[in-house]
Image (cartoon, rainbow, N blue to C red; front, side, top):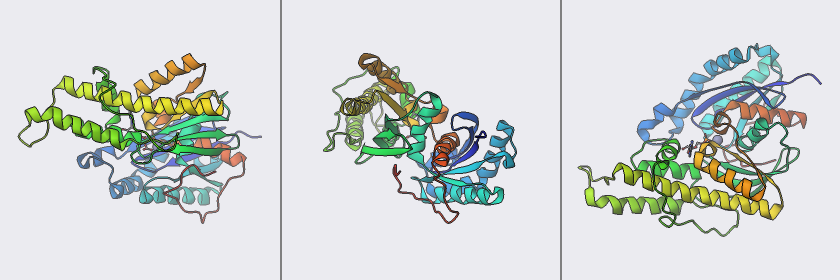
Length: 346
Ligand code: KG4
Ligand code: ZN
């Protein structure tokens, strides 16, 4: 069979991503432009701004992706696109763009589940990796545990009942006055902080593989209010010293990370699967990577983390999963629409 090159389009949130991947594994290019700066003043992603930014960025990002891969559009074999989940307007624009390309180039259109693509990034990272394996998705919008089966079948075992873990990082960062997005800043500051494991509670959930992070976020908020009430700023905001901020960041991060590690290990134990793939933006977190590496060594498991460029939202992971789906014949008619609420459907 000829070598297949697939172009993947990702516009579910604030990143406009287009990647070109050969045979589902070999990344030829992975261009991303983010509208992050435009959302910063609001402390979170504004859907209307994100959608407009995709319209403005898509052509440029596609030109970059083609140039980096040194390909002409006619040399592409299929167009993959994130169908969902995500912001409705943002998804809609990526889908419309993908349909236009598929129509103009007369190539198949492959709709892709964004969460499944975060997990497929593990297979792009370690070429010998084949399902079944345990999949943990940790991002700004989702936190879920799954078993990834052969033939791109995804079995959902549990998910967050309230905030996603990335959302908790972002909200805690806001409480600490660290700006948006908070994950990378907390990751950095926590390195210099002292961990107090008893400071914040690990939430109990009814479902063994479900998560809850809103209680942790509230506990951090209340702690910061108490700690800071001794030195209120002119605006009434709590004033913490640099050391206090680092300590809170470290203790919060430790609690969040331990929850993720403990539940994932429980799935491995329950299913007997020995490979774990961790994907999504929060998988960039260095403490999370270190703790999984420790536990994997202790329990003789294999923990796979894609490189950061494949963890955050990107088009290459969409193209990669698109290849697996194309082989299974999972192409769509041009009448398909985006699906903002989709969650690991197979
Ligand atoms: O997967 P992603 O790029 O977008 C979504 O699909 O949501 O994930 C974005 C999330 C944000 O909440 C961001 O704060 C978090 O990933 N994040 C991190 C780190 N880098 C990004 N969280 C913790 N530590 C990091 N180093
Ligand atoms: Zn994502």
